[in-house]
Image 1 (cartoon, one colour):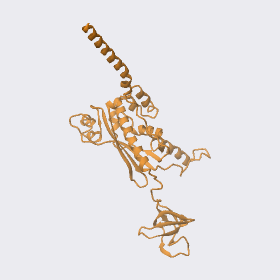
Image 2 (tube, helix red, strand yellow):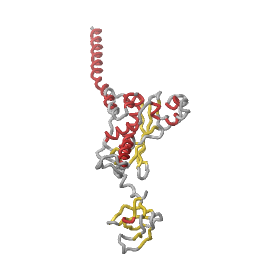
Image 3 (cartoon, one colour):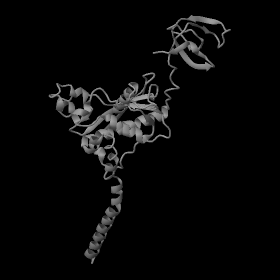
Image 4 (cartoon, one colour):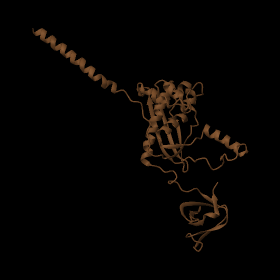
Length: 312
């Protein structure tokens, strides 16, 4: 009788264990990583041009330029207004050449002074590391073919361990100040997104970045760049840069001889005489036609804006 009772306890324990596993299975499924999300912005920070780095490391990996990849992030995030400084600009310049040669119909409204200026330039690159002579990274694998140069250029990507270390640099066009520099990291094990991963990568093909979606190393690099972009957007949201307001006005040169006054009035005291060709630096303060400016010696005063032109 005691043996029968003990057997019932063992069976009951086994059943409870099985039930526990069954109940726990959804939790296990829930532990699967969700596809990463591109960060969103409520308002645009400014106008952005994405420029590829000089070392074309992606060629050896049979990937497209990371410029196309980053543009997808930027477009979907809504954080910047994109301006094309690549193939789109080349095509636009061809149209402008036609217009300049009188080949376009009248009223086409294509001419100078229409291209939108970029406030920032974003450069996607990889983290430089020393060449791995053991052949564990791309530099070691390609060093023989490329004369050892690849190790320094491509040290941020490992084909053996399927890892990528990348960097995004956001630079203010006017001041050349580095507004934000962020590193991103990813490895093969980070790609456990299940079926959702296909949906995430599906949007890159149309943007000319299909190889980042179709290859394992391309997916790792994509995840690394997204990691860096998320950090960059968070950084930009915190510092809230304003490229136009944070920079001084463009310098001007005197087109005609004139004078600098201590106040915006021809009856004011003359600070100094100004000769044609002299460079002035407007402070941004204006009153009618009068601009407050300083010269290269530090003298400051008011000058009629009708006397100068933008410095070239």
